[in-house]
Length: 303
Image 1 (tube, rainbow, N blue to C red):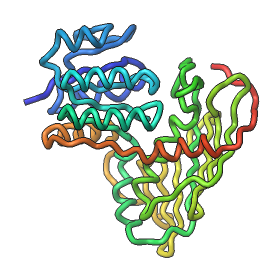
Image 2 (image 1 turned 60 degrees about the horizontal axis):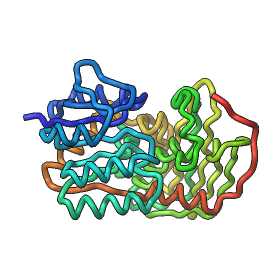
Image 3 (image 1 turned 30 degrees about the horizontal axis):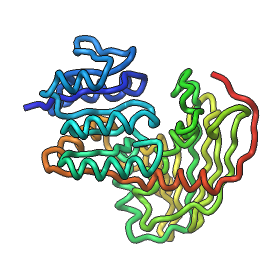
């Protein structure tokens, strides 16, 4: 029997990933949407979350695809209404508000799932298993993409709480924090801010244990989403956002890449088991980089 789910925030990520994943799942039925402007054909549409919660008691699960800043209020209302909640990444604008949501969900007896879709990339679990127990001599993230392609016209990414390049950077950090045999912490960062913008468009971050990262939102043409790790047993590289795994240059068989379908499968299990999954370790790195980072100005940016 499928469960009814409502999708809140019908923008690019919802249409590209969430709607197809829900529609293809044997576990879920998209029963309602909430958005000021977007809709999904054939699905009852609301423009107000309070109205949807009041009218659709049959919808017990809410998936929030809003930008991080307004997400807390929506999540809080859904949890207080007794609904299970999925949070698109990054799960909130601040660590404190997500901690508050986690405590509230536990109090209300509902599931809260802070999703990190890149952790579901095809090569990630196999990489984690191979790295277990090994010593990392050096690791480097190269995460460079085109903000105009992935966030066309979305000015909120450069507003306070939008996180700038750390919005996609959180994907890399979600993988890194999942696969490393032991945790690392940020030791220094350089953050590049376009003139007049409130969040960085590029960042170079140094972590403990000889781990580093280069994040950039200005790359056109082919996009680069790679993490390379050198160990005493060889070199492991996750590329294509974690979908491709090579060890000492040999490509491994990791199967089909199913990031968002896997998130909804995970949510099915969490709800069935009465559990939550709220790992904030990628956001800790972002907060620390923004705290320690040396700010430098760069060329203006416009969509």
